[in-house]
Length: 112
Image (cartoon, rainbow, N blue to C red):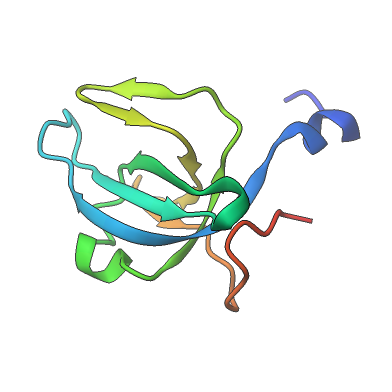
């Protein structure tokens, strides 16, 4: 694994946002949830798809704050355009647990 420089790390725009809508992504090949995430007035709402159905369903995601990379290029996933990458941690069984702040944070707050 190659070490990152500090300048490379600073280019990653990792922000916190609140899930405002979530639904099962029925057209996805692998089980996934489509979300809209509010990153505050400066950034706005961005869409994302995440393969997190082992531990989450749309109802328990509403209002949850998540950490997401917002400066990746948009990615077409079937009929859906993903605008950010929601982050999480891979468990031993391959499932994903979301990376979330342990206290409420202002939407749009950047990882420091």
